[in-house]
Image (cartoon, rainbow, N blue to C red; front, top):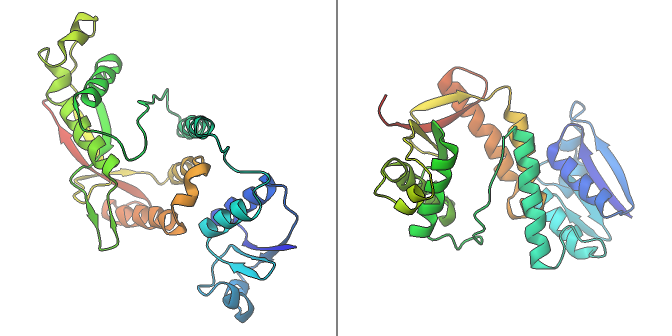
Amino acid sequence: MIRFYYGSGSPFSWRVQLVLEEKGLAYEPVLLSFEKGEHKSPAHLARSPHGKVPALEDDGVSLYESSAIVEYLEERYPRTPLLPPDPAERARVRIEETAKASERLGFADHFHLDYRDGELPDDLDLRAAIVRRVRELRPEVVLCPDPTAVFFGDAYFNHRDHRVTGWATLDAVAPAAGNPHYFPDQIVDGLAVHHVRAVYLSGTLEPNCWVDISDVLERKIDALFCHASQLTETGDWFREFLRDRAEEAGRAAGVRYAEGFRRLTFGS
């Protein structure tokens, strides 16, 4: 039988337990007490060298990273797959996950431009689509990735789609959305030009403003967990990174948790 080691309040443990339940697998849960230091015991360190949870043992296999555990369970027990094998169905699942994350964050609405992962082109069609949304929705503030943030240390660099999204959004906001000579067919369709007052660049290496997220950090992480089908593509380090980064930014802002942005302002 599968033996599942977990700790109370650990979101990484919840993730694995949800997969076990979703697949209907029989398992023995073993709760480790953080207060008693049971996660640092010699027995647990033998199965999880860093003394972390969750950990899982199954027929001689011992694993201790939640992303690796989920991937193992998906391949070892394929009878109840987490994702449908059909590409169209997988796309539908991920659209539903976006809707769940949007709802968790309290968004009024969300839209998909239907580009495939890794194939986002910085071209006229993409900029036209973003300009159309800006002219339709008429926001005062636009949020997008900082396209100049490329290298994060020596072990990670920013995904191309993120960089393309940032550049295309900036080009769409200024000057395109506010200039009738850009995409005049939209003007013919009845859309008026719109001037965005500010852009907040996320994931920046050069923040110049900070937003207090102390009351909503858990909601942000919950929204991330809504993308369950993609979590095997990001290790636990990323979720720990979110918390650590929020705490670090909070020190700069004088609050518990904050998020830093590079803010660009256009006019008054």
